[in-house]
Image (cartoon, rainbow, N blue to C red; front, side, top):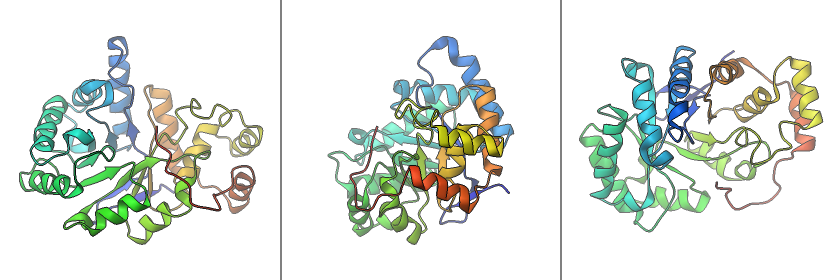
Length: 283
């Protein structure tokens, strides 16, 4: 059965989307990247996540081409640099992103990470963008527990719609307090690098013998196992990057994978949940 994530305003989305980090960097890869994003939309991977940082706008341009004639099929997310998150700067940055994306609105606009701009300024800018119809929701990225609590104490901070953080089997720090807190608040978490960047962050994940054994028993790949684990419970939306049609199809199929209690216990033995608070992992 497919898994979904529900936003506070009732928007219900498939729990796996499409990331675009590193897209737009190599012109020769552009046709393949566009085709992969379009296939993902056809397979129901509605969320496309990008940022002004990725290839300094290059990824947004790729997404804009991919969405030509398909904008209504996508839930489009982009992110603003922290130094562009001021009252006026955020509005200008958003307008530049919209131009590159060839659209007139974002479904979700995130502060990429926390910088020197006061949170109340960023909230004011986000509220202005909503009033102008340029974004439908706003959220944050790379915010830890203390950051979220400070945000919620700001006037308008309760309107934050999502927090995007690093989360994969070998980086489980958020399981201790951030994920439970966000679930309590019914705030979706978007998991970036759920495959540990295809094993580049933790090369042993995709070759771990026990994970390979579990995956083989289910007739799935280890990558699909990692995705199914990331979205095993409610409230997490994984956004793996997929720049090929084969990877996109495999990611979409992971929406239908359910891990048994026994399989989850096996995984837990090798990759246990943290027993204490840990600093938020960021890449």
